[in-house]
Length: 227
Image (cartoon, helix red, strand yellow):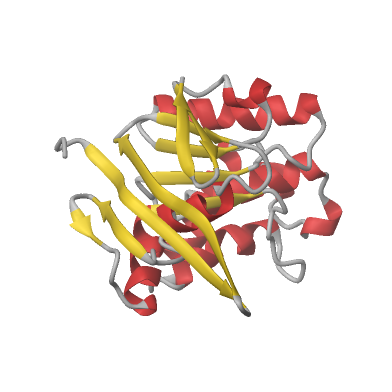
């Protein structure tokens, strides 16, 4: 493993037991991502993209195989240990935004810092800076239902950066947006990558994926093509 590798999946299998049936979502997936890369993961429905995201994002553990984050094998960690790693090292952007409707934009962005025991003043100061970075300085006190889809996704980008993670994992980040708004979101991801963040983006859209430096094509739970 090269020393600048930040995430490595080594022959990872994920098998779900659905009643009498075994479903092999990942079948020997191997993938290596270096610090500062912008990688897109593509594949048809059922190819294992979502399961791969869960593995890369420390949301789940493999049935067999190994996952390394910063050279450490995290394959057998407990859920509480995984949660701590997730909170510190990985920022998430989801297709559905996943904002809390009862909180303002500022409070949504500050929330992940609460779980890392950051004091309140620092949380609010950081959240303000991040919202200004995504050009929503004038929308801090608005709740999600008072924002457009594109604005909500920009709040989600700001939230993903709140603990200054090494990796930003974007799962279909433009999936619920029109093409023009999607371009704005992609430009923010490119900007973050230029500033040194490792970006891993899942997309079914080739026009979106082409913004990445490298594309990994998945089919039947494994990489079938690299581009």
